[in-house]
Image 1 (cartoon, rainbow, N blue to C red):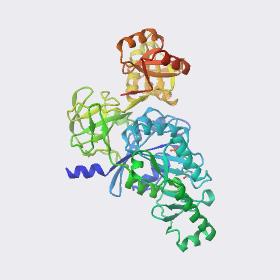
Image 2: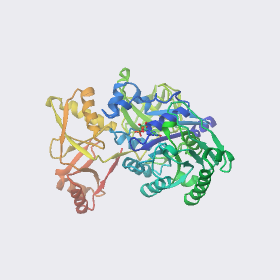
Image 3: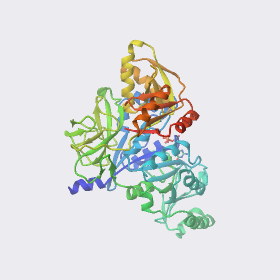
Image 4: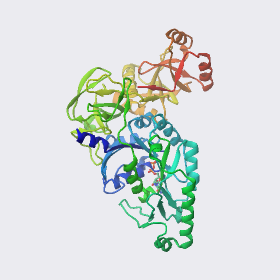
Length: 527
Ligand code: GDP
């Protein structure tokens, strides 16, 4: 029992959120480097050259086998076991990214010091806020001319609505970047550019009064630094662990990921303050990670790119108890006990089968179409984890089938892809159209590609007069029936059979909401 608690409490499960190009991949790589999970950076994902030509997904498809393992990376660091979940972040951005955030206990936000807070970061932060996820911030690319650190923190506070507590403070930037000062252990870590992939520890000077500081910076720059630090201490928030854990305050670090600089400070602090596995809500009760019985939920389903295993993998977050190889668990939605043999676990270097997984860990279950996103697994208890959302898509296309004889395969393919969260499908009540909804534009390419590869169905997409979708419900069955009748031209069923209003314009949506006060319009639907 106490081993179980120890193992649970040493888990730290998190994801990185950022706008494309801020440096998420580079930071990931350097974290793995410092976690000794890889020997040399530049080995995690060889996808850079492909990036602008095609989506990550297709690039990964080309390098069969790596996508499933790179979705979660586990490595030990100091006393902790770290689980880092990848959030697909480029052109193929999809709802997957959002749902990964339901499976983490904290998140690291990476910001480009020249660009500040960008649009994608805002969206991802909104999702983190749904669960008050604690956020750490890394301001990257200090080796380039960027914006003033004070101004950047100001922007984070104003735009993202979270207080900032600098832990390190940069000394200069761009060509004049000299290093960072650690506000809490008073050490100065001097910067030296290292584009190589190996760990480098630059010189560390202890204390702002250290004469070595004068030698390195010159006496006027050293004085300026002392003044600036005093100012920063006065003007910024002090780190407060409770505010951090409540998602209200973010510790901020500065550095240059490509130069392996500032990453160690970040990781050392992360393992000290990041929360261990947290409790999870179910419809019935709250599940605590210390509970002995196994529970978990599926937050992502992904096609397995390994041609040897041409099935799909369901990613399950363990919420309580232990997974033991070969154990039986109740798949609550279908009310069956199933054997969880050969789950995949994710030690960073290679894919391997482990015998045991603890709360905070992610396991990959082989799925032959019976597992859906949002599924709960238990040891017999009737539970349903909540908070794993479907987001209303922002882009819509009508499907055009080349060969009408393939209609059945098309329907099946679209339903399965929508269970995976690869896209969403809507079937209007009043006509035979099939409408696909997505959050990112490349999702359509992925859907077309996979329909062809996996279901042997060729189709194309055409424009459709839908601007946005809302799932509709009502307390009063009669009102709902009336709405269903009157608004049927704009109503559709999604893959799960939930009633959805497809609005041709925002204005139409607003008017409809106004006209039907007894109907609730939801921008997210829970799995
Ligand atoms: P992602 O799109 O967020 O995964 O970002 P990447 O890690 O791929 O980085 C985007 C670009 O920024 C790449 O060309 C990196 O080499 C570059 N980059 C990452 N970190 C740094 C840094 O600290 N300094 C500079 N100058 N460039 C960086």
